Length: 126
Image (tube, rainbow, N blue to C red; front, side, top):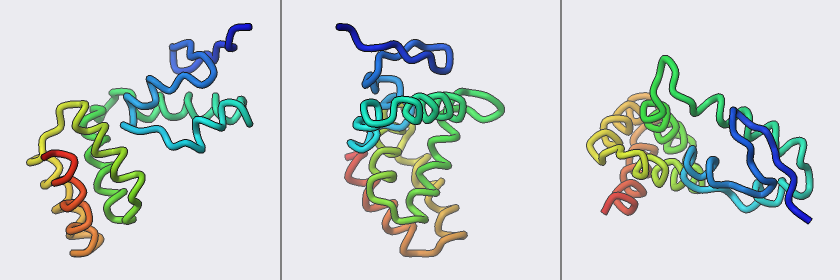
């Protein structure tokens, strides 16, 4: 028995195939991998939304990734920040670009968010 195909954002994913999602965000949480089996309709909906959000448009995927890093740092979300930084590195984002995005985080969310983001980025980009 083969896995069902999930049409999504112009792609046909096999249920449980997280390659495109990993490319988009950098790391797929375990709960989302499990969602493919426990709630395939929700899984498909999230994949479609994810592809829509991360597709190049008025903003490039790279610019969106820097925004996501700033947001995750400001929320001090370990998993999201790590995933977004991994994805950014994969896209060719530089540490200098991450640092600049984190300066914006500092202005809007404060020093703890800035330090939090810089600490994680230093680990990922070493």
